[in-house]
Length: 312
Ligand SMILES: NC(=O)c1ccc[n+]([C@@H]2O[C@H](COP(=O)([O-])OP(=O)(O)OC[C@H]3O[C@@H](n4cnc5c(N)ncnc54)[C@H](OP(=O)(O)O)[C@@H]3O)[C@@H](O)[C@H]2O)c1
Image (cartoon, rainbow, N blue to C red; front, side, top):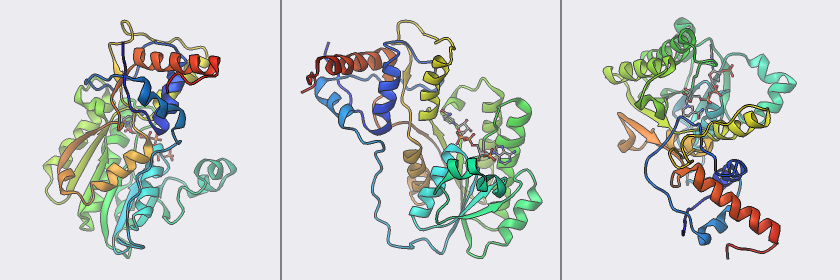
């Protein structure tokens, strides 16, 4: 059987990681349904891939300096990437964090390094609408967009409704109160088939956003993040069992890199095609089954053992 796939950047790393599990199926809850094929020619890119495939964007220095972008949940996995992308595009970027002191500890410095370079870091309790309103009212450069990357740590019903719904709604309302133009919500692909309280809370917020007319919006529903996929390997290394659905070809996974998701989210500020819509977004490549990942892994292992390039 001839297989073909275009694999790049983090996706390659991810592929190798999961490939080590040799043909077992993914437990990821984020799947897409179109088929993928793999070939020897394009598998070469697995070996030469760079860690990130970041698209160059041509932005004049300090374009957008007259617009403020507020990022709620700025310390999160996606929030950090969004802050970096917003700064890169020249927006006056305000990173909302729960605790500035946490950022200044050794762990905080190690975790966040330069993530907030060029941004204004502001502490705010997003569960407190009055605090949010006060903060936004004191920002000199008009607030153009609020990007909400908040997520409850556990996803329990109580937390999901407090953070994924209410605190995120507080951000939307505070943006509207200062006449912001646009609101970007980090939602999830799995909201298409809601089974969990977390998904219900997100859907409730999505509905609120769609009901209102003061702000334009983009509801972004990404597929799995790389951290979730590589997390499966870590769980197995820690002794947890691996769940296999069928023969490994039942489920497909198309993870997205945080930097590419951040680009997509920032694009929604200026692209009318991304306005007032729910946008599903996955990795740039074809979705892969675990069987395919296993096949790529076997090819790579063969090449490594034989010291020859089977992929030329
Ligand atoms: N994992 C996946 O594969 C996947 C795929 C698609 C969509 N999603 C969606 O993406 C979101 C997760 O994004 P992520 O991984 O970037 O999340 P994350 O790393 O857990 O970040 C969550 C952010 O929310 C903040 N936060 C949580 N509780 C808060 C509170 N009480 N007050 C203030 N801030 C609070 C956190 O602040 P602290 O740093 O102070 O805690 C952090 O900045 C979820 O909504 C999930 O459904 C996930």
